Length: 308
Image (cartoon, rainbow, N blue to C red):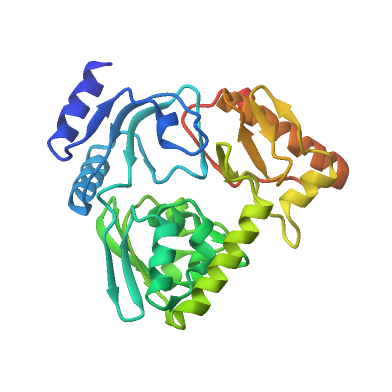
């Protein structure tokens, strides 16, 4: 560790109780792939998260935010600078009629179940998405033809210019995209607008979508969820399947036989394996259909040029 990194870790320790040096990030993502972070900061409250984000914007060291880690591929070399891990402790939920205010670390499946129990409809699609509220808001996570943009009313976040509430068009929602992917901001909490409905009916819809997910998507092996964005009026999984990509492997990474838009870590996969496999799959689809697949997962850390 450099002297500069040690001083940064010391400064962050005055703002947050949990600061770790050289933490392996594979422990914090669903792919179970990734090297160390110079500094991992794990805020245990919105106040800690806000203080850390404000400090980092003010002092300008490089940093990234990691939620549940279900839609990212972290470099084998790790991440230089600071990684903010959002999760436990940032999981408070407030119910106000048909409105929910959820902190960034709330698990989306948990929130969907809680909403169903309270007779609040609109989150059923999210019951099988292994994401935090913060990550889901940033990625405009979706499933079964629905997405977060349908229910997000506003988002409170820290920006380089201080705390701000984003709402309406300022959220910049399109398919798997939001303003938070192009403008610097650290999400603190989101206000969701649901609608009152029969709890039993909501649970039935939720159970049916979870059943479909279990039958069509690999649940057990480590993965990052869907790897590629769906092209307009088509599905990346279908294209990969028809192009002959199912079962294709590079090192410890393999395309799922159940859902071709999933890459599985069979045990010892590296980020380089995954990128190499993505390249092979993309080439197959281009050769067969003349269509270019675009990644849906986010690459974090330093990837050699030949891997991207």
